Amino acid sequence: MATIENFDFNGKKAIVRVDFNVPLDENGNITDDTRIRGALPTLKKILADGGSLIIMSHMGKPKGKVNPKMSLSQIKDAVAKALGTEVKFAEDCAKASEAAKDLKPGEVLMLENLRFYPEEEGKPVGIEKDAPEYEAAKKEMKERQKEFAKTLASYADVYVNDAFGTAHRRHASTAVIADYFDADHKMLGYLMEKEVKAVDNILKDIKHPFTAIMGGSKVSTKIGIIENLMDKVDNLILCGGMTYTFAKAMGGHVGDSLCENDKLDLALDIMKKAKEKGVNLVLGVDCIAADSFSNDANTQVVSVMEIPDGWEGLDAGPKTRELFRDAIKDAKTILWNGPAGVFEFDNFTGGSRAVADAIVEATEKGAFSLVGGGDSVACVNKFGLADKVSYVSTGGGALLEAIEGKVLPGVAAVK
Image: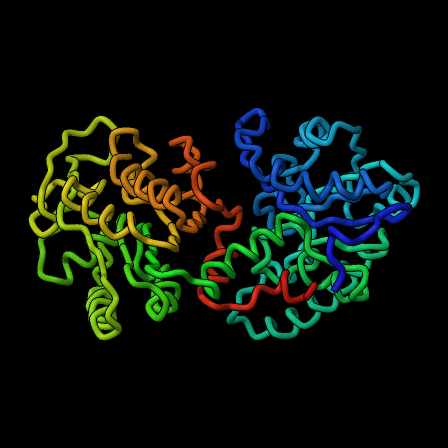
């Protein structure tokens, strides 16, 4: 398999799948350019070698229809500034062959949003899954997806996938396109290589003790990851909104807190499995309860087992923060996915900040720490600590599926 470091792009046209699905404000201005900055080493290497560059990405979920609010034309100038060179723009990603053909070494062309075409995602549009015609429509769409991928591939000599955020999707531009390049002309970009290595560090090269921190609102969305981690971790911290499902499962009164009442048995089962496997399962014992879901609500510290009616747990309490710190500070491998409270509200960032500070402390002592998933990344960025952990992953769903042990189509198609 070719690698980006060893490949000479001189005189070659390279089509690069990036993840430029960046957040925009109401005026179309980028509010966080992390994903653009992340792709720069790959893009600049191609240009520095004397190659020409075709950039492709999606933005948002236009569901196969053209939507000006999700046009990549809005970020063209920002990408040009980051690259330090002019960026041409193809207003139709499937009709860019002439623009691609005319590209000279050192020139850059950006394609319009791939998801303006339903063929990118390869799902039938406007047909319910249980409709009798769905299977036939799905088969037809798969053929159309291949043709779409073939068109994209025809623009270039080399394919580079640097979009870890979409690596868990078998889309035209992330996986199917790779079929149209031989092994010497398809490769992972620098960002993808770093992401894959970071996941391998967590799953294959574990230094113990290994502490995983899983936050978020629902147990049900994290169950696959929790079960896969059970055989690997020494300490498993479950925090955030799922705290209250566990508290209720143990007979607690959780007031108006977020709680999955249909997952109480699942919570008890997780506790049982942790005990059987000798995993130290760390759950919240107290919380900062609020009388409304707002930053300026009245608050009190209460046991997670005794939250009064009309009150809801919005952050980890002081005793809980100490328990978290104890499970993190001496770890040699750390994975953090999901905050410990409603960190978007400044008055409820304390639990997440305590987790972040403990991770930084352990990292300074030599631990490998991986932070991933949108909210955790937003947390470390908010606290200004992103450069004090070992690795911050750009992929939410892709990272979680990799940790679940699933094969990522975007990686497998290249490898």
